Image (cartoon, rainbow, N blue to C red; front, side, top):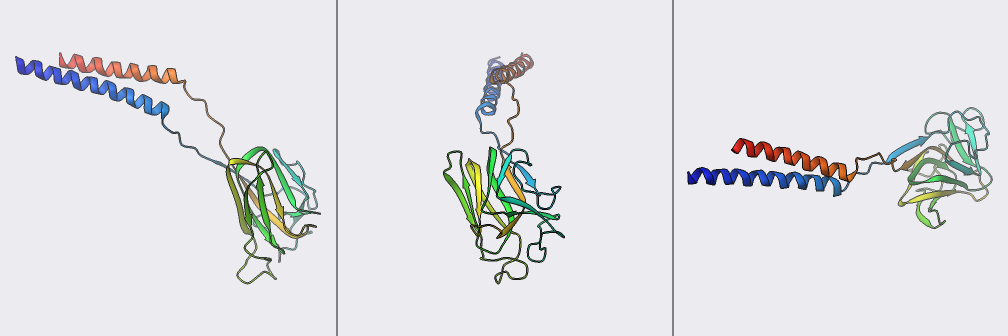
Length: 218
């Protein structure tokens, strides 16, 4: 008899442990860190006519000193081959600048150039937050520096957010082309169940488990 009572007490204790464990799972689910995934958007400049002055044709972006060049027309594809497609953009009358309506976490693109490049990134307060520089002075297809090749990847990143970038070769322009620009952004938040709903669900589940365990022990 005493042994049976002892065994029943052990089973009830185990059921209580199960209840606390369920509660702990709920708390960890609510308070634990959530994984953050980034979204990448590639802009290849296709579909725009040769010679187009690029300003705000691409939603969410504002370009300055930027012109579309197309292979077979104004683009010398031997020295400045596109990374993909037939279109690239070039610095037109000065450094290219790009402003983002919504700050991005990262920016990269492929560059072919006849002068050293600097890629500078700025936050909403116009404070520089990141930079990148070309590996060579010239990486064109027929006259590039030894070891170079067209379409060098340059990238900048900042978790605090990038609101604009500036890309400078020769200050007067006409010194580089850019292709396949990628913007890294944080995904839009998805709706989540309220904390109260999650807690109540967890408590209800734990209570059901406890009732079933106690009934099986009786």
